[in-house]
Length: 76
Image (cartoon, rainbow, N blue to C red; front, side, top):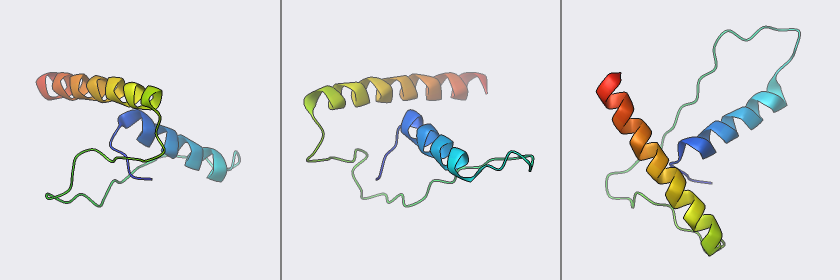
């Protein structure tokens, strides 16, 4: 499912790690790649199935992501 929020991307990566991690083989590096961006696409993925409460949470998480981006850009 398309998304742009850090929390959703993190959770998807965490689930993938849980499903594929073998305790007997150490993990040195984990990477997540995000692709499929197009300039003419809308920045928000709309869903017919989201309820209003879910959209409020997504808006709050989007605001958190924007603040984190600003802090990262300012302080590295």
